[in-house]
Image (tube, rainbow, N blue to C red):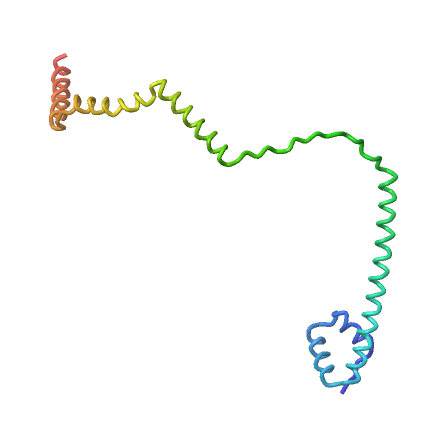
Length: 160
């Protein structure tokens, strides 16, 4: 059985091995307890380094945020105090709003009635019926009249 060195297991922990090498390393870790122990020690070391890195990162972040806050306090003057009078939104009750809508509808209807719009709409079907009754002649009579007019026009042309 071939044992791998610390650099190999570090690359395995950092996930920089190829797929084939990774599968081979996993099989080897399942069989070899000494390599597994070495790998576990590496992981503990990596976790300590990562925790140190996160602590350092938090310290740097804190210093940067403090510097930004100091710069903002120096650069930005306080906003001028302006008394703003805001009107509170007036909420109407739903019944009151419904009544207002009904009143508007009644007013519109009264205006339309006074102008005679509804009277004209009521008379329109009667006018259409009268027009249809006056124009009610047979289709065959209409065709005969048109045919006669065409024949008369043809007869008159050669004589001219």
